[in-house]
Image (cartoon, rainbow, N blue to C red; front, side, top):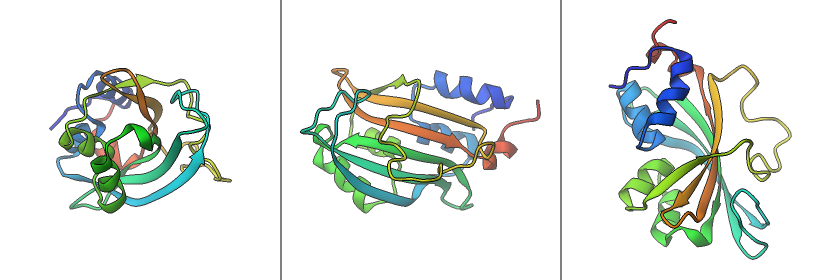
Amino acid sequence: MVRVETRSRLEVALESTSGTVTNFLEQLVGESIDARGCRHEMIGSHTSSALRSGQDQPLLHRSATLQGRDSGRSYVYAESVIVTSRVPAGFRHRLETGNDPIGRILAEEGIEATRQALAEPDRFILAGSSEPPVAFGDYLLVRTYRIDDVTETPLMAITEWFLPALIPFLPSQ
């Protein structure tokens, strides 16, 4: 189990982990994590500066809630934009057919990747949404980052909202 002393330490702990967010959450809350309520939508070929993609590269918009397998608690809401041509077919198949979070799929498919913090979400995250997915103040932390492969080619951009269900796992300040 991971010990996180305060809410502000949540961000520090996340930034210092060398593993996936999925693995971090599983250690923090003490249960397996699954991606639930997944939505997969091809958003066509778009230019994305964060992903260094051109008009010829289709993008997949995915949203999911990372939930405890046993408790059913929602710990993180995440939206991602994935350059489908840059990830293996097995990765795409698992995204579409299972309930594995992206981090687990990356690890189990042997895809070596790094995270790069982004100042703001890719403009295609939340595309078509009239309301933000999580109301202001209904989360502990929000962050956006890009996942690159070992050649520093951007694979996807992810925005995560860490939800209040994590509070019991964060000792009082």
